[in-house]
Amino acid sequence: MSARKREFRSDTMTQPTAAMREAMRTAVVGDDVCEEDPTAIRLQELAAERVGTQAALFVPSGTFGNQCAIAVHTRPGDEMILSDTIHVVEYEAAAAASLWGVQSRTVVPTRTTYLTADDIVPRLRTVEDIHYPRTGLIVLENALTGGTVMPLDAMADVAALARAHGIPVHLDGARLFNAAVALGVPASEIAQHCDSVTFCLSKGLGAPVGSLLCGTNEFIKKARRQRKMMGGGMRQVGVLCAPGIIALEEGPDWLETDHQNARLLAGLFAEVPGIVIDVEQVHINMVFLHVDGEARSETDLAMFLNARDFNVYPPEKFGLRFMLSREVDENDVRELAAVVAEYMSR
Image 1 (spheres, rainbow, N blue to C red):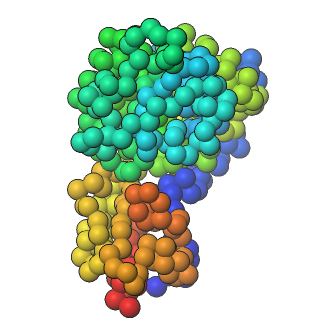
Image 2 (cartoon, helix red, strand yellow):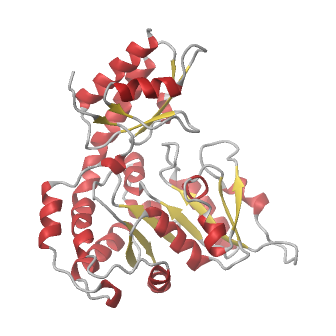
Image 3 (tube, rainbow, N blue to C red):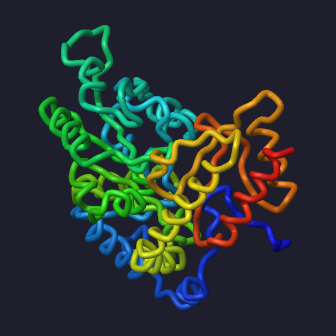
């Protein structure tokens, strides 16, 4: 068995390729705050084309992009409707409340892993009343934090509901291209149901840093000002955008391999006595498991794996998570499954 560390914590751990490093070294740059960085302009135009929007804006991270979008769409005292497990709720440090004065009305999906229009309808503030906040935004996620995807027809239903009430929809599409691969559609077919979209370059697409916020020309004009206010004006940003161009041009082709490895890993886990896993819920490059039995736990399993050079995070809400990326291959997957089986047989 290899002595090197196998990286299963996150697809954010992907290392930039040699081509990305060279692109950073040779990038033609300018002052992006003045909209004069040709490499940033090229990346933003490419992102808008792939997502099917009028314009796009390079931002430091997915959290930054989501919060920038919330700031543009809402006003202090507004309420946004979103799932209780969405990234904006779980992993963005209450930024919407702290920065923008926006209340989160979290909803537990009733029948699926994602919010449906039926879930949202009872939470809409449709009556003008001084006691109520205004429903200012609906936030969706695709792919979802738990590793599943939201079907297009469900997104279309939410979009129709939102437009009927004049409410914008923002999509946290951190793994938008994973969702596109899983659904077998271009990313633009997902994004068309939303007024703004964020996606990450620095996850499965493999770039070292950065995300894109996409929307109409008017939305991006406002978002650019908001980005500056938030400290995201980064001057000669082409050195960061150059690997992002490669990630966006070549990265989506890598994702199906990650998905295949995830399905392989889930299938191998399912064969291990005492491992509880729903193989049908493995839609993208994310695998969750639970450990059955009082003598063992996901926390102990994580410690066991880390001691044997398999990097994993501690268990979370959905169980012990394993992320597939270009940092691991099929052999790593099979070795990981064997070590899990060893732990369960102790």
